[in-house]
Every structure is written in structure tokens, then in C-alpha cells.
Length: 263
Image: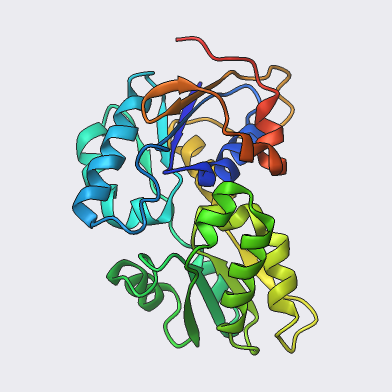
């Protein structure tokens, strides 16, 4: 079994780690685009072109499924990716976890990149899954870039700025960019400091997309599988290694111990 994941950068780590936990024996192909990142400021057409290139690099290794582990790419490029690769390779997009966050009806905030915040795609998800719920969309300029570099000071500044825009009444927070899941705990602490609640629920997408990828290929989770699958890292189509900032996060350390993949 081989699962490929794609993103502009290390935002694919949470979903890759989720796949590794669910199926330790799965081979993983991590395809990112250091030559073209960040994708967020690009036009939809330019972003789609970069995403197709990254996806085709992964597809060359014949994975059983491809996870688009990037909210921005899922917003703008998912139809093109599916048209290019399916049905040979199932393509699983990443959808902000608005539906579970809105369950119960408490106010919700959605942290996302400026390119995703306010997009027709996100607004449609809000109408579909959070109708009647008080939802605040919070743009987080610079946060994904800071996470990509594992720059703790820049992360703290960007988190503080987004927290200042987050209403104190929220009960749930959607992490609408895959990079943000790598710093979920600092986000939780910053938002809790502003809210009236004793706790706040954070909703990411990594686990859900990992489960969906396994479902699409007819595989069951088996966390006790004894074998450890291989790992192949593609950097703008070139064979490489996990970027050094990856090792600043538990997800990166989990993946770093894998043997190199063949084929």
C-alpha cells in the first residue's frame, strides 16, 4: 500500500503522520514545492499549475491514493487534480472541519490563510454545515510561512495577531490550513487566554483525510501493523529529504525514522 501526499511545504506532515499512525506499514510519498512556495499569494491559475506539477511528480511513483494536504490547493485546484489523475489514482481533498466544529451550535472561528478566508468555497462550506451558527472567519497572514520555517518568534506573533481577531465567545476553532495543525497547542493557549471558556475545541483535518484515503482504497486502519513503511520525499519533483524544520515538530520526527522507499 502506498499513499502520496502533496502540499506547498510541510503542511502535509499532520496528515502524513496520521496515515503513519493508522497504517504503520504504508509506504508514503511526500511531494512538496519548495521552488514555488508559498502558494497562497498565487493566482488560482498559477497555483493550479504548481499543484498539478507536484501531483504528477507523486503520481509517477504509482501511489494507491493522493491526499491533497493543503486547504488552499483544495479550494482552487482540486477539480483539475481529479481530472488529471482519476480514476487511476483517487484524489482526496482537505476540507476545513467546519461541520464537526458547528455541531452543538456554539460560535465558531475559522483560522485560514488570507487566500482561503472569505473564498466562495469556504463560504459555501459555512452555509452548508454551519447554517444558523455564529461563524467568524479569521485571516492569518504569515502564520503558515512561520510554521514552514519553524520560526518560534514569528509563530508567536502571527498567532497573537489572529487571536486578537478571534471573538471571546467561541466554543470551537477550525484550523483551516494544514500548517496550523503543527502548532495547535500554542494556538489553543493563545485563544483560551481571550475566551470566557475553560476549554476550547480545535478541529483539524489530518485524521479525517487519512481515514478517507484508506477508505477510498478499501483498506482498514491497523495501528498495530508490525512493519514500518518506507518514505520518499519529493521537493519540486526532485528526490530529497525531509526539510530540517520538519524535525522541529513531533509529526516530522515520527516520519523521520522511516526507511527510504523504493520504486
